[in-house]
Amino acid sequence: MSVTDHSNCGEVRRLAEERGALQHVATLVARGASPSVIFNAAACALGGLIKADYTAINRYEGDRTMSIMAFWRAPGTPDIGPPFGGRWTLGDDTPSAAVLRGHRPSSRASATISSDIGGWHREHRIGHVVACPVIVDDHLWGTMTALYLGAEPPKGDVEERMGKFVELLNCAIIQAKTRCELIASRARLVTSADATRRRIERDLHDGAQQHLISLALRLREAEESVPPGNEELRRRLSEAVQDLTGTIDELREVSVGLRPPTLAARGLDAALTQLVARSPVPVELHIDADRRLDEEIEVSLYYVVSEALTNVLKHANASTVSVDLAKQDSQVRLAVRDDGVGGADPTRGSGLTGLRDRVEALGGILQITSPTGHGTSVVVTIG
Image 1 (cartoon, helix red, strand yellow):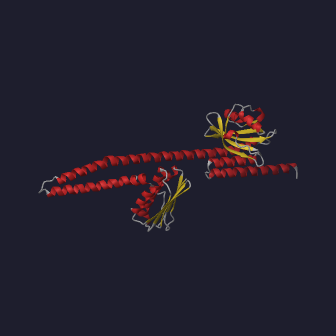
Image 2 (image 1 turned 45 degrees about the vertical axis):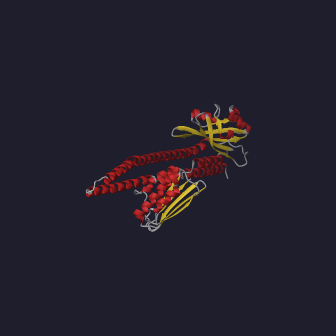
Image 3 (image 1 turned 30 degrees about the vertical axis):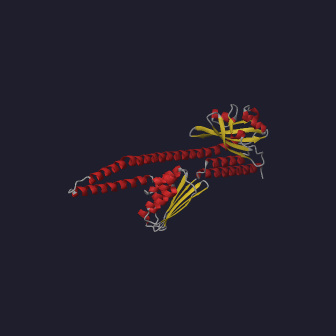
């Protein structure tokens, strides 16, 4: 085989390795994996591809320090761990400082770095450092860094190959940032809605409801003071009191629908027991939680069950419903299942669609499965 053939084979093999490494990280990005998973995978894949002894993904902080988001070492190399526990001072003569100034890749021999990180490099026999910028939304986010043991500088187009991974990291960071902003936005909406609901509850109880009760008492006093012989007036006042009492009861039901007092006073277990007892469709309730949950979680789960039972009554034509709530370690799982007609489409106006934002704002997942003829299942997982 000629020298050219050997060279071509090596190039093909190099391209195949590069494609495989990039594809693995790209798949994680596409699946929405967490940034920590993507960072670790990228650091590992890059290290193997450019034959580095160590790789790191660093984020610039506002106080001229670097936070290490991922740190990888090649098999057989000393387990030195991230420098200074994972956060180090940038200095002026490091490759990362050069990247910060010029937004371009930079490489240096550790012997020329006088700052603290240079001393750490030499202490651990790291001879050369290569850093590439990670730019997100036109702002420098941090660096991807390769570290090499010994005195020999790295061979080949290290900076170019690192740049391809940097593009994937950009996508992952933007994706994570967008998701965090979405969750924060949902949380603000949920908080605002809850505050409005509490204000309405308070206004109903302290305002309209109290006024109506006071009016009913005055009418009852008027009824009792009607002189003998005015039975028609007495009858009308009695009917007015009864109608007013009915209105107060309806208003109380509206207030309870906003947030039942039992939920705040006695917790989700008691509130769900009270809720299913009012259901015209038989409900089997199973709760496996030995203590109260966070208030936001209890409120959200209560609303999910309430909405699911409402949908069963309106649309499902079901004969039985099961509600199962379990807490295991840090995870809470709620499942509401019925044996009705199924075919529910949550994209067509179901109240459960609005609850999805509430659940996801808590870091949870709400799933609805409703095959035609086989009932509907609503499952919430938080934690």
